[in-house]
Amino acid sequence: MTLRSLLTALAALPLVATAPVLADTLKTDCPPEALGTARVLTLGPEAGQAYGSVQHPRLPLKPHEVVLTFDDGPRPDTTPEVLNALKAECVKATFFMTGDAVTQYPDLARLVVSDGHTAGMHSYKHDNMTALSPEAQKEDLKTTQAALKATLGADAAPFYRFPYLGQTEHLLAEAKAQGITVFSIDAAANDWEAGETAVSVTNRLMNNLATSKGGIILLHDWQPVTAEAMPMILKALKDQGYKVVHVNWTR
Ligand SMILES: [Zn+2]
Image (cartoon, rainbow, N blue to C red):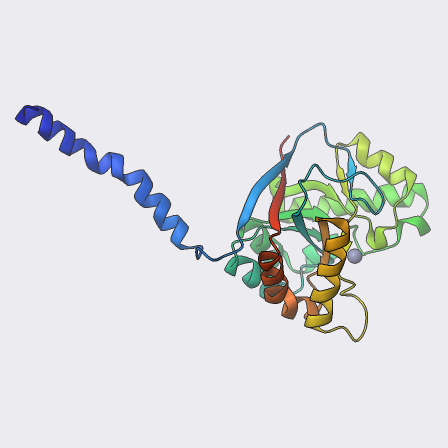
């Protein structure tokens, strides 16, 4: 090797070294023992599908893969705690927000998205769509879309979950026509029931997941018991070998 070629090689070294060093720096934000997000499942413009084995076919997930979803937020007294728990384990989730909550707490809705999570719709005021006329259902979807768009712009996902999982043929058809993906669930924690504790919610979810073999998990970020249970739930997922999949979309 000539001196010139040696110098040239040495000069090139820092450039070559930059990428791995940067990658390592990013990695250190996430402790090696963290649960982490195993992969991203991107739903394309062919969407307009409905997923979740309680009412529909399953998402294309492998056994033991789970998708974390949180309904009814964002709420200032509990959502930040949920976000902190997710961040500590480097896990990305999907939040089905009501238009009303997004309008009340726009900064919190933006924080959810800037933390890297997906923001989907959950009606405007959590009305049961099965009790509304087809026109009122369509109007509710329109108002919800406008509320999320006003706050989140292009970050508002074309994802929808029916309040109470009370789906209607009319709104399912409307969602399909607009390319909106509808999310039902595969496993719940019943974290909305009275008298639950962090332990009971965690145990129920893990039992239900053992039956469903993974899939879409339903939680509620406005429930104090859920905010409290999140570190325990994420630890149980990790200990039992579940892999977290983040669902995103592309147009
Ligand atoms: Zn709900």
